[in-house]
Length: 198
Image (cartoon, rainbow, N blue to C red; front, top):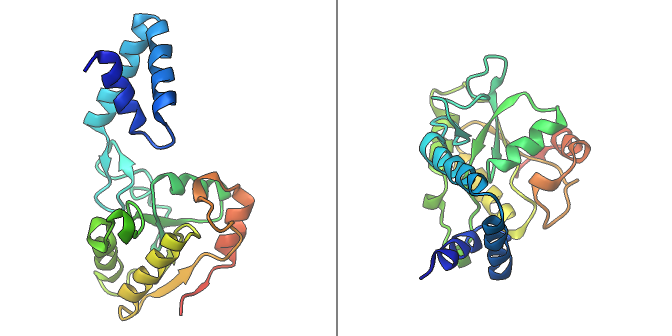
């Protein structure tokens, strides 16, 4: 396999990048000065070496804990559960949430082979219950898709007997949409109108 095919193949593995786009990006990089390609390669190498999941919430970080978990001004008694780390930025842009987060690392999808043990749900349950009484509410902010709803229900079932209030962000986000692309006002309304899961 040639270097061009190798890079195009790796780029095609990225979400939203098909084979044609990957090949187009590869040829674009070949037209750039050599230094630009080397900077990109170094940035990818540094990313892989330095960034790791926060041991508390699983948000990517270069520090021992992410900036949100290490912020003493955050309310650690309220945990907002999201599918991906990119969803955190969308919620933060709303300016309405001062609690902390928990990144599941995806959503349940048996057809794609994603089972509960593939996500950080077990860690969430431990975090919400140990020590007892510290966490008073878990807000489930999974995407309003079939898989997101199934994940929300599973999380609610796992926390049902833990004595923690479990809420779901209100509708206000389009069904099938992603938090990452929602505007701050929509997310703020959804957070403010959250409800108990039953």
